[in-house]
Each structure stands twice: as C-alpha cells, then as structure tokens.
Length: 160
Figure 1: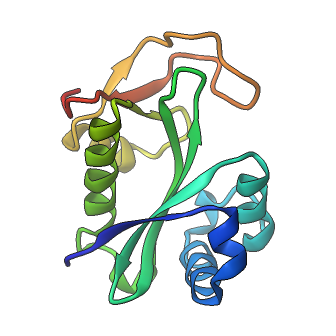
Figure 2 (figure 1 turned 45 degrees about the horizontal axis):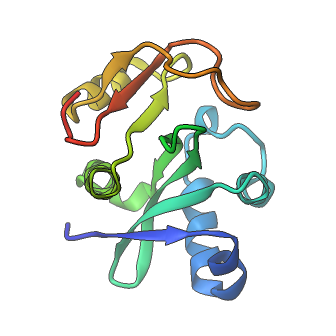
C-alpha cells in the first residue's frame, strides 16, 4: 500500500476537519489495552498540549495510521501509541509509517526511540525486525520521559 508521511500538529488538527475525523478514527479503532485514556479526543489533545505531534500514514487523502512523537532534550524523537485503522491492518501500513519516519529522522540527523516496558512481545519483535535495538539511556530524562533504559533506538543511519 503506497502511503506517504504526513505530520499532524495542533494547527493542522484545528484547521482540517478531515484530519480530525481520521485521527480520531485511528485511535477509536485501537485495541482497548493500547489506549491510555478511555476517550480519544482528550488523549490526542493531551499530546498536543505537550508540544507533541503525530506522524501519520496517508493514503488516498485519508490517514490510516499514526504514532505520537515527542522531541527529547537531545533532539531524539520518542515514539508512542502506534496504531493503524482496523480495516487496513496487516497490510504493511504501520511498518511503512515507521520506515518513512526513520527516513525523515535520518535526513534530520535524529534518532528514533521507543520505550518498551509496556509493549507486547509481538510489538517488540516487529521493532527488532525494523532495526530497533536496546540502548542505554544517554541523558537525564525530562519530565514525562522514561527514567529507565528500557527502550529501543533506531540510529540516524537506519542501523540498530
């Protein structure tokens, strides 16, 4: 499925009704154990309030998948809450979204990090296949960031 990378920040969320509908649908389709809050819109707005954005998979003018992105003190992007619309799961949308985000990170000299302590085994296996490797925490964590080294990282060259 030929998806492209699309960033959704607070301004795009407020300005584009279709983006709002699609992003809400993505997280409404999430398995209940993956959603940290019982309702979707407060979850999304909480991310925007923290100056996060969503990296999304766009296909035929519709968002099919999303991952929340928070910038760390060292410019690394911490990723969380990856989800793909139920109707398009198991078609490579999530993997393609992660690959596109990895390409952008490489172009910008960033690393991608994902905290893994609460991820199911299947998600950890997928991250390993995508090139993410366990790393030691290189910085003193900021508020809201994982305090442990229980995370994986994809370096700017795309090698774990």
